[in-house]
Image (cartoon, rainbow, N blue to C red; front, top):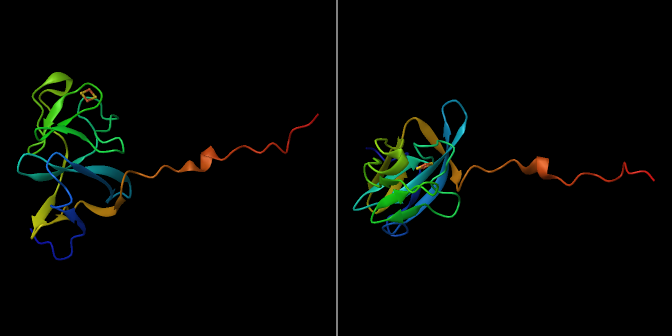
Length: 142
Ligand code: FES
């Protein structure tokens, strides 16, 4: 896979085995989607950041995906997904496979080479926190 124009996500050195890196991509329809890049058992792969049992459950909740022996562990019910194939053969998510995002390792660097989306930014989807503004008290009357 050509990496000439592909954005560099990180380096293999910065992503030790059983570690993960969260980033956000923009899909063709303009929507944003979180992706978790993982270093599994002799592989580096990327997956959309949600479980296949309950798709509103994030695998990486903003502080790294839980991983053991190259498997990604769902934080809700503990199903383990193979970090290389994305497949799960245990627990509530048994028989399912994570949604993959194409990445390519070239000369020690990891590139996003998925043609269906583009890199937006590191980290998860930024919440629009305008709704969290403290409400004005100027309308109080006595
Ligand atoms: S939500 Fe992931 S195993 Fe249930």
